[in-house]
View 1: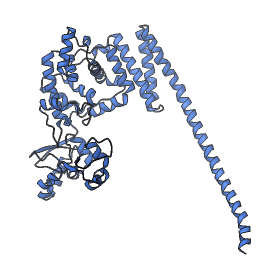
View 2 (view 1 turned 90 degrees about the vertical axis):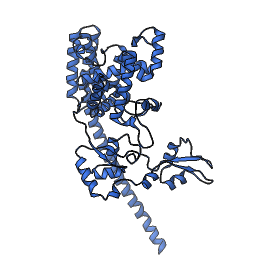
View 3 (view 1 turned 45 degrees about the vertical axis):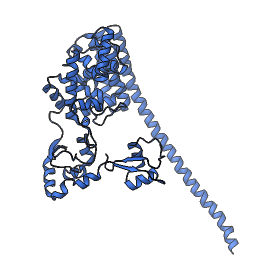
Length: 443
């Protein structure tokens, strides 16, 4: 009986299998057909966009040719017509292609203006006479075309800082356009750091930072404080200007060091920045700043927007002890990430215990909420006790026989990656009696 069942079951199984195979093939065929339809639609749309872009590219080329022949009026006409057509295609083009073409038109427009001696003559800086030469043009091209995304992000970040930084430079009797130097230095990113261990908006190394009154310790790094670092930059730049008598030379000294600039002046027998033999980075430094100023002074020409806020986009509150940043975020009804971004100088998850009073930045409009929620907490819960602060300091662990990085990381509730980073370890290998630094609350 069992054999008979097996004999009849076998063909049924294959019939069912064949049926499901046919269904599967049908689904596959439908998917392929749908995919080809979608692909064909995309290709048709792409072809339409390409047909619209071709005349724009032609106008760009014709404008360049007219400029080369010194036919300024024709170059201007073709350039403006091309840019106008491009702006209408913004929604249809890929972002990268649109930005590239916009950057090309913007740079070309500025070259036309420079040849026309009209609009470029109106772009002035309180820092120095703006020079248009091949070195400056190279960086205008870089910021507007090749590295447009980065420069655009830098401008956006700078909006909340530049008004206050300009005020700081005015108070120090310095040109307010020095505020734009930080766009070249760091893109106004407070956590920026270089291979030479320069940090913050103004890219100070430790020695120069401390010489200009900035504090750096386990709890905080004032190079990352937007206002304090700007004041330090004002002191350093003022000192350099008093030494060299020229902002081009002062900025060169800021970049590569005053002694190197003095040596280059003595060797060349001239104080003309453009004639000096300096490190390549420094030779590009002033042209970068000039290029940035050209763009910032007329952002619309290059398709950028710059909305400089009159008021800072944060509120300030003074606290009377060391406070956990997570509690700050809770009281301000905000997030830890936002509190950290507003207070980039803080290196740990708390305000410094060595300062009896500390001014914290909070999201705009959150000061009242913060103070109200803080007052609802019992006094002993508001600030960290001495015992809690002690726990947050560096732990130096002595490696024992049988220890591994993963075991140490597990016990200390940190990651192996963090242990390797804190101790500059290139591999997972450790040895008995080796000292391992652990930062339990390190950001």
